[in-house]
Image (cartoon, rainbow, N blue to C red):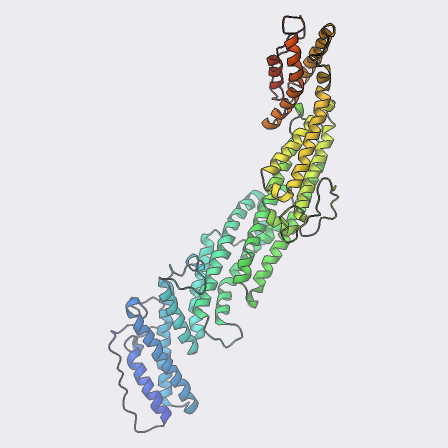
Length: 579
C-alpha cells in the first residue's frame, strides 16, 4: 500500500449529470466526493492486499486523527448511498463503482485497525486494562481505544464484521497465549500430570496458584474490558453480541485448559501431607470465583463457570478424604514408650502444627465442610456448638470449627491413653498438663483461637489447672503434710523436721529431672509449690535456725533454690544431702 500525500478535501460537489435518475445522481455525487478524499490516503491500483505490515504513517496517528474521523464520516455517507441506491437501481454502474471504492477503503481500515491495535500494545496489556473499570477513560489509551471502536463500528456497519473481528481475535489470542506462557503455563494433559512424582507436582501447584490469580484477576479480566470497550455498541446479525463472541473465541479454550490442573490434583492419592497444596489450589479458585462469574458471565461461557464449580467440588472431596486420613493417622499412632520426664509428646506437636495450618484455611474449610457435624459425638462440656452462626460461619460453632475441635479431641484422647504408660501417677498428670498446655499455646497464638472461640480456650485452661492440682497433690502432698510449723513443740520439732527432710529429699531427687518445657507454666508450678512450703518453713527456721540442731540443714534460701532447680530437665541438679 502506498500512502499519498493528503491534500485539501474538496467540499464543492460536481454538477449533477444531465441524464440518469435521482439515485444515480446521489450515489454519483457521493462516490466522486468519497473517492477524492479516500484517494488522498489510499492508492487502489498500488494496494497490496497480501500485506499485513503496519504503515510508517497512519491516518489514525496523533497528527492525523482529525482526518481519520473525516475518513470514517465519508465512508458512512458512502455506505448510506450504497444502501439507498441498491434499493432503487441495483444494476447501476455507479453502485458498482461505489462498492469497489468501499472495498478498497475497508482494506485500508483493516490495516489501520491492526496497526492501532499492535502499536498501542503497551496500553492494551491486561494489567493496564484490568486496573480500570469498563466505564473509565484513561489518558494514554483513551484515544487509541476510541480509534479502534470507531474503526470497528464503521467496518461492522458496512458489512465487514468478519474482517475486523478476525484481525482482533488473531492478535489478542496470540497475546493471551504468550502471557500465559510467560507466567509458566504448561500444556500438560491430565494423563501426563498424573504420572509426575508428587514432589514435582507440588512445585507445579505453586506455579499454578500464581498463574491462576494473574489469569483471572488480570489477564481475562483485561480482555473482557477491552472487548466491551471496542465492540460494545456494535450490532451483530446473530443473537450473540460481537463483544461476547470475540471475547469467547479469544479466551475460552485458554480458560478451560487452566482447570485441567486442579481436576488432576483432586485425583491424586489421598494422603495427609498433600492436604495443604490441595487447599492452596482450592483456595485460589474460591477467591477468584467472583471474578470468574463476572468475567465469564455470558451463556456461551457457562462451561468456564461450571469447570470452576466442578474443580471446587472435586478438590473439596479430596480435602475431606485427606482429613479423614489424617484423623486415622492419629488414632493409629502406636508408640508404647512413655515420653521421658513427662514432656510434650511428638504426636501432640505434629498434630497441633497440622491443625494450626488447617485453621489458616478456615474460609476454604468452611466452604468444604458445609454439613452440620451432628455425627461427631462431641461432649457438650468439651465443645458447645449451640451458638452456630450460619451468617458468619468462621466463628466458633460452625461445622468447620466443630471438625477441628473433633480432631483435637481425638488427639487429647490419644494423649490420655499414653499417660497411662507412666507407672507414676504424678508424672502422668504432669504429662497431661504439659501436653494440654502445649495445645492451648497453639490455639491462643493462631487462627484456632478465632475458630474455636474463647469458651473452648477457657474450658481447657481449667483442665490444665485441674491436672496440675492433681500432680501437686500426688507429688508434693507428703512434703507439704510433713512441713513443721512455728507452733510445733520443741520436743517434736526434731522428729517433724526429720520427716520433712526425708520427704523433701525423696521428692526432689525424683522430680528434679522431670520437665515442664514452657517457661511460664514451669514458673507457675514452682511458685505454687513455693507458696505452700516457704511460709511454714521460714517461720520454723527462725525458731530453729541452722546450727541449733544437727538436722536443720537448709536455710529458706537453700530450700527456695532447690525448688527453682526443678522442671528444667537438666542433669547435674544441685545435690541434696542424705544425712
